[in-house]
Image (cartoon, rainbow over all chains, first blue to last red; front, top):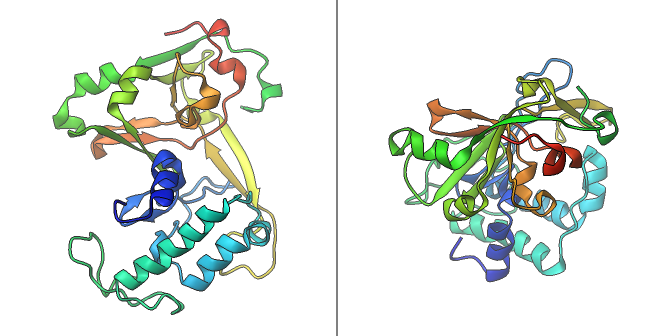
Length: 123
Length: 151
């Protein structure tokens, strides 16, 4: 995170649970839901932040109330500066990996030296 | 077991393990080395603590509460409107569960200001890390020393 803007680093690092469900650069959670009827581990794990197509991420950041209502989740109140930083986080990371941020779905992966779990065959 | 405040009027006793003493006893061969403690819960949610800060806070791992030794019997329920946002076109109610399990308790820190107090869980030595059950907002009476028997 050292190469990210101060505001973003402070937001994520001072609140580690902000990365509780989703990873960024192989750090963080990969959360899933447990259905109440059978208690099973349900497929559909939280994607790493950098895996989202920019269009999806943009809507999540800037249309948070509508998105939260659609899925039945609590809305996140992004502070204006933080919202922009989160948006830039994804776009910048995709460009760093030579992935067009606007391609949807995100299937073509480019290995980045020193990064774990990244390969062109990564689903 | 219901964990809503109204369902548990008081908590009489709890059984716990000192986290720091446990880490020291296990040693680096079991849990690795470093200045940070990484925690994952049963739903693969993640958080990390500075070990220096943890030593100041002296957290306890609560493994029993009011005679109940299987804290996974305590479950928090919630629901969403879609199981998969990219699959379900029509909204419908999807019921989900968060089992509690053992959880971290910070006796000397105001839990309301300690996000870690919302974490709960059990330990999984095989993966060399603490494996915690989902976070849950514990009723205030359960984190008030005056009504807890203590370790």
